[in-house]
Image (tube, rainbow, N blue to C red; front, top):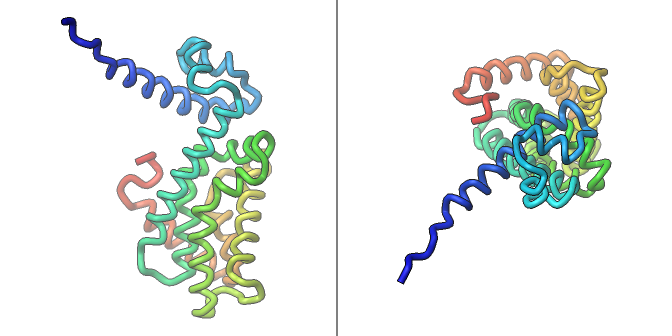
Length: 217
């Protein structure tokens, strides 16, 4: 009796192709949001059939990228809020931790809003929103953030501000330096401008020195 043919290499190739397509899509969509699926296949070094075998259409590709971005934000949020530090520093760390993810997926937010709807963007940002709400609630109790709005509403407002700032970067209105964006976020939460600047600059210098920060690890 003949032995069954091993299929592991085929599955491995499929996973490799899928990962390469997603990696290429992140880069190419950032350069050209209107790139066609055929152009993307060529850029990824796969045939059209392979691309469509993994992603039947542009929407399926964007959904996969959205899921990937949400998972990356979840990891960033968990890393950022795992430390016991004052609420203003925790909020700065949380939004600074979005930088590597934001660099990879900034254009995706605009594309997801356009092609997948606001609900999908809300889902992508849920990990950061939930973490920010917890930090804001603690900071309001400590008197660090203003209490004119409940934490959930204030978190939603900061999220909208963050998305608007990221879209301004996409449009070339703002540089892609995240520090001024995070300073603006802390000011919007109720931290005085000088204090917000000092906190963000200090936290930024600390996390930039942490192994693996910003290199995709």
